[in-house]
Length: 273
Image 1 (spheres, helix red, strand yellow):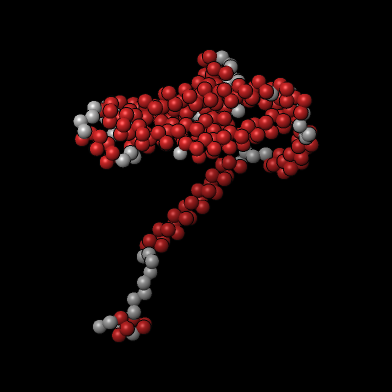
Image 2: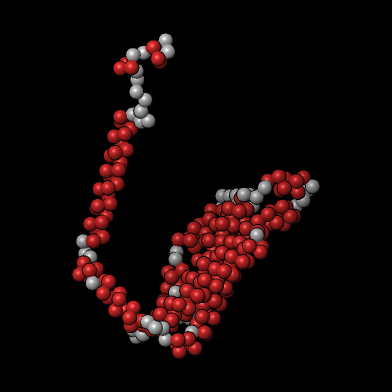
């Protein structure tokens, strides 16, 4: 008997999900809505709505006092801007120096010890990625004092996790056929690493390093807010004295620096990858 032989009233109706499945989905959405409402109440129970209602007027007043920028202040920004670029560049180099050996220790196909060294390397990478550069800067400023050195180390320690993670994933994704071909010639482990793995990961390494430098330009611009040097220190000083035209100029300089670094990063990655 075919389906067409069954009366229309008795034919089974196909449903994408069972009744229990549909009820479970509805209950899940209801739970998400309830969770959103609960979180919203927690976030807004201490909100002073009088300030929220006055925010457009306050923003307009601040903008009127911050414009036009104080262009004469630019002479005092060249050195802090140069310090910011140096913090990003030297911090990136420090991150590369620390991240490369960690990446080879963390990669499952290059680590000499999966039971000890690989977990330690993975922990270092995760710990670096878990701590924001501002927190690194706060800790290092309290230890080393304010200055550029704390900013360089903060950028470097933060970069280790980013570079190390992407690099060890690139190492693990290398073509095993090339490695097996070199191994078949009787090559040593060092030769396998040098001729079978490193050439495959070099393009990724260059791209990751340049991309991280671009990110570090942005992050180093605000480290001065916690005393780690750079143009952020001038921003903090201008905010402290409510010199809003100077703040506008500094923000424009930071924006221009980020745009230029993005352009340089894109050009370099296009040239080497």
